[in-house]
Length: 308
Image (cartoon, rainbow, N blue to C red; front, side, top):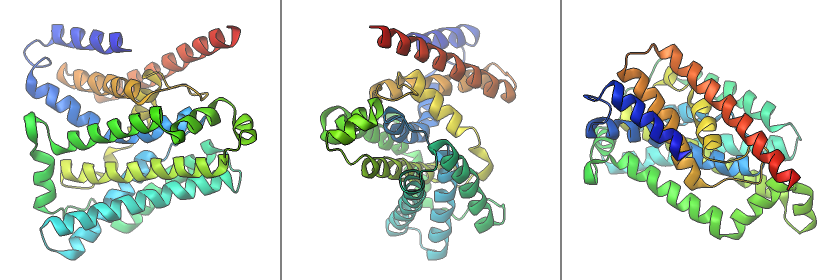
């Protein structure tokens, strides 16, 4: 999929050579990708295990709302307040993730239905807490964290890079990662091999919720507000990026490294459409069809592996 990303860069650079290939725009692209990448790391684990989590965008919003509310209630503007806000965001995200995991593993509700339900529930809860209004009581310390950073990149981007590196190493080099692949390939074989499949899935959904909570805190740092209505297509972009990065929707295959490249594709596409003045609605159309095409290619590869 690196070729697809390169193709998009070449096309948009040719159409708008004065704007798209600039350093400032490259920084915008990686900033746009940062929160999505954090969520995509968790989604990669879940999809390798043959699961799905449709709730990440709403959990991001809920975690951001809780974090902003608590920081606003504290009232002070320092790193102590910001770290409390981070802890609240992580706890809120983890709570939704564990709820998803328990419903899937203990109640045996399919992951698609469970996370579709929490997609609406988490967003509804966020609107109930705020009465549908964005929270803007974000400490200046957190906003400055989102602006500054070494080598011209925001600390938000560096956090996303760190999450991707740690997530990739754990997936590729630890027993936890190996168990994730085994469960996605054949859950029953995993059980016979002594893996506690339900407990592992609970951890995976907890991880996905935790990272969505972190993404909510990073979103606060970037926008200085909760942007409740601004994340309706996040889950589409995340799943598209993960699938484009080579992770199979049917489980058993995928890498975090591939996800890093994959998540840049819908991000670069969205950025390029804005620069060439394409209506925002076409961005969603294009991303949706790219996802369909990616799943089709994944099915072809899967059939080829089965025949081999």
